[in-house]
Length: 178
Image 1 (tube, rainbow, N blue to C red):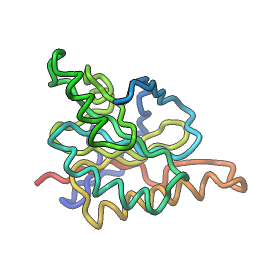
Image 2: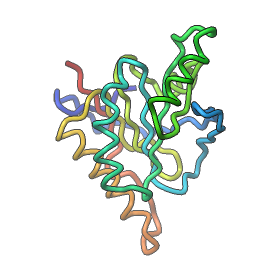
Image 3: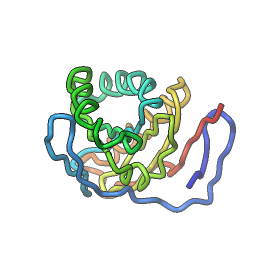
Image 4: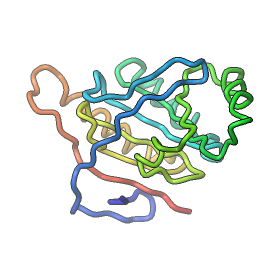
């Protein structure tokens, strides 16, 4: 479901909040990860296949540098195109080349549950209750990064003890198509 866009001017104020999917996956080290709501921290979920993975670092570095442990920043590798006999080799490549845990979605069910667009990084900002406050697709741009930062900052402020209600600033989906 595409509700709005950054970059090409699509926008809509007629939208309903969408809840993210809860799931369990193993990472490249065999460790089980559960993505369940409520989240203890604001969630940033990045989903990418091989083609989309080239844009991950440009999203991850500035977000991690700014927020470190104040957000839950996690990645899912969409690997449904990998034949079963090659899974061990792919898992080994992740172990060798990626220092942080990446959840491996061999079936593609998690990606499908998040309406993932193939070939591009899909970034989701999730509220504590699992509401997707923002979705952006594609490589980082200054405008898209600022929109993600603004949404995270809003959620972090809203979750401070003096604030009784946590809500998305502007529930929106973004898509930047070439």
